Amino acid sequence: MSNTASPNESVVTSYADAPTRTISTGGVTFAYRELGPKGRIPVFFFVHLAATLDNWDPRIIDPIAKHRHVITFNQRGVGASSGQVPDSIEVMADDAYSFIKALGFDKIDIFSFSLGGMIAQDLAVKHPDLVRKLVLTGTGPRGGKDIDKVAGTTYYDILRAALTRSDAKEFLFFNRNATGKPAAKAFIKRLQERTVDRDAPISVKAFQTQLKAIKKWGRSAPADLSKLTQPALIANGDNDRMVPSVLSEDLHRRITGSELIIYPDSGHGAIFQFHDKFAPVAVEFLAH
Image 1 (spheres, rainbow, N blue to C red):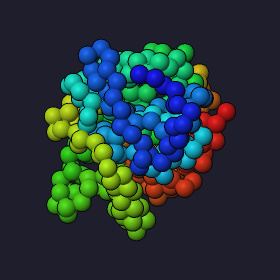
Image 2 (tube, rainbow, N blue to C red):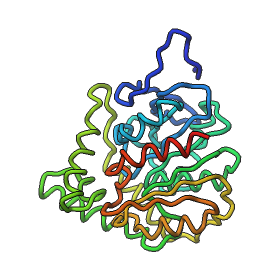
Image 3 (cartoon, rainbow, N blue to C red):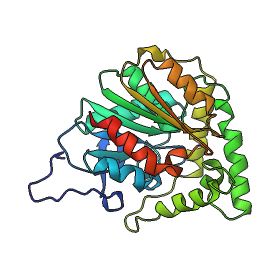
């Protein structure tokens, strides 16, 4: 499989149009999408709990893909990727490493959200030379206070959403107030912009295994994040119910020289609620 576009191939810069591809390595077939101009260090997007390729906000991806080669992917056992979801973040990080190497890259930037940020931290600690820059949003460090309670919050909000026939992300990612509710509806609508070649949803078993892995991560001994010397951009809302906002501050303290943005009146999905403010910051951070 070639990583270079043919001279006649036009560059896709809209996530809604990015083709879904697969690559096999170590007995796993990974599903991924790529867009944006190739040539520079690619930006790999690490997605959240229960998410597939269809869960990235195009208002975040498209501005980055304007000037950068962007790759989104499904972890093992998720969506169109084959195999079983591992029950630990460490193995998820190993899988991500296998996938990145299979595509032939030795240096990458990472944009991560929530569970994806946990996997990204582990990958960067294990393979510091691989990662040039880290964007860690809506996430927290290994052993972070109350991360192990994510499962309880998640199940509670799934139930609340089911009772109102809503998408659970409206409850999990956004405040249930006059600013949060419309932001939630707008976000869910944007996720529907891609109309063809949509991904398979995550299975209940795979989702439950991811939750187990997060619980284990929350109860593990903290990692030594002082090893991370890459520039890091950390962002969250001031009222994250899933991965408590104080954990973003904790990450900021632990990663020397990192930059922290906390958005007001917003929750776990603050970067989606404030995509018009955050996307340019992320573009600028990843640019140099």
